[in-house]
Image (cartoon, rainbow, N blue to C red; front, side, top):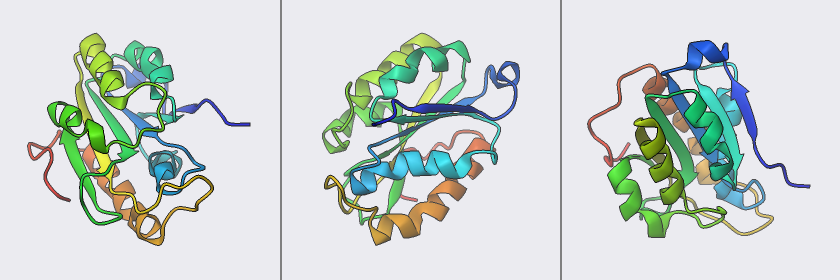
Length: 173
């Protein structure tokens, strides 16, 4: 049976108000599409942020995210932006709309709409950390390239959480 997603609050909920929400998106049964969920797994207990393992239904976490009154929201998802497998880039909210065709379509509601709703309801800055997939077939394991990049992705997110949002949205990392 597939889970509908999980929530992990690192610290007390009251302390998280006005902080950052990180939403890992993807289908664990479709190879590199699991990257967002895998990053959330790796961040547990290591960051002071509200972490959502949204799997293929990030829209299920709109209300819990809104309740925390975040100042920043970061989605992590497989995204075909034309890079090399395992490459990752940070995109700002406006760029997410332009990337819509490259976002992996395993989500119930388009990620662009979920991001827009969260931005409207919270006023938070919305970001996407897109990871270039190599394989997305049902039943496939995560590719060697994406698995190898996973520690660097986790380290990037940890650094991003401890710093102000970068001004270089969309730049290659």
